[in-house]
Image 1 (spheres, one colour):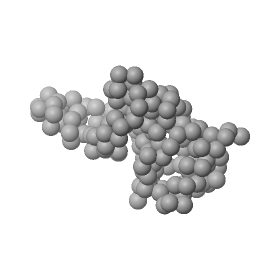
Image 2 (tube, one colour; image 1 turned 180 degrees about the horizontal axis):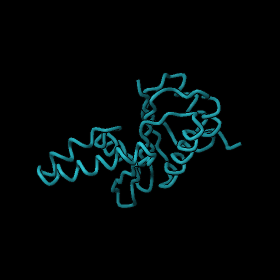
Image 3 (cartoon, rainbow, N blue to C red; image 1 turned 90 degrees about the vertical axis):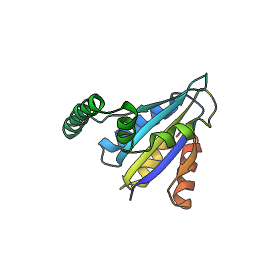
Image 4 (tube, helix red, strand yellow; image 1 turned 90 degrees about the horizontal axis):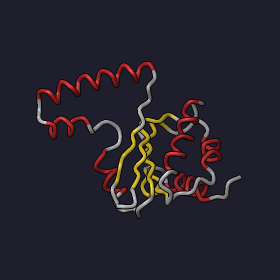
Amino acid sequence: MSTLVVVGYDDPHKAEEVRFKLRKLQSEYLLDLEDAVVAIKDEKGKVKLHQAVNLTADGAVSYGFLGSLAGLIFQNAAAGAASGALTDVGINEHFMKELSATLSPCSSTLFVLLRRPSSDRERVLEELQGTGGRILKTSLSHEDEAKLQAALSAPRS
């Protein structure tokens, strides 16, 4: 079962920095990310989602196919119906925008969906130590949530 973690930051660039760290941990096989999306709320209050596309060989083929399929769908169907069907992959877009809208302007939110728990939780917490932020939503146990929040809030080592 996948695990959802949503962390809010008071800095508009911080969520992207942390997502970069998570991608690094994934490349070291310490995390198995299913999805990682950054939402930024600008000074006017508008929320923009920044979804990362992992262009591995399989990913490039998959996204290329999905792009072609989307082109065909948009050619032959109403844009609203087609876009609604394509947004249910990964983390729900409506959920991300709705939650991010509650934050203050010039802030960012990191939405992470993990396929399975980390093989080395201590190393992951060490990498995230001192990055700041507050957990907004999660499907972690209360104990794991407390450990993650403590790592985020701890001073950098």
